[in-house]
Amino acid sequence: MEVQGKIKLIGDTKTFGNNGFRKREVVVTTEEQYPQHLMVEFVQDKTDLLDSYKVGQPVKIGINLRGREWVSPQGETKYFNSIQGWRIENLEAGQTGNSNVPPPDQFEPANDLNDEDYDDLPF
Image 1 (cartoon, rainbow, N blue to C red):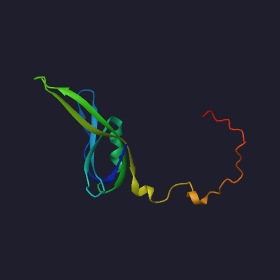
Image 2: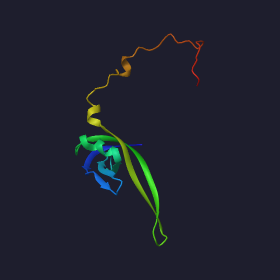
Image 3: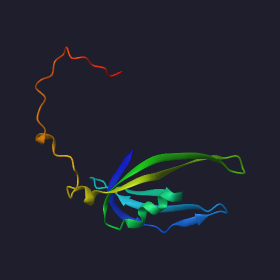
Image 4: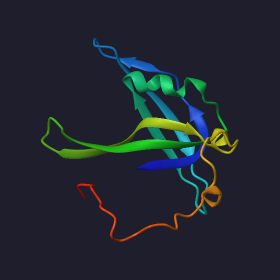
């Protein structure tokens, strides 16, 4: 899944526990009729992906939804959800036209196709 929006806040990298678990949070504001402020967490080596980003930049973030169950000492069960990022892309960079692929209208149509041609594809 993906989330698009502008970066509202980038947190500092925090380290937890004896094993050095690292986590960094970013808040993205979606650009729709009713904007949402979504907190996405990046963990371990993915925290470094946020180093080159700044507040206000439009981004697209590849995410996974995570959920876990927790049982309190009193036996009450609670459920927690989180949004975990694994990729981030600067949308401003995508608008500069750095792609080496020409637009679709630049390709010549294939007119010499024949239904009788041998197809060796396994699907």
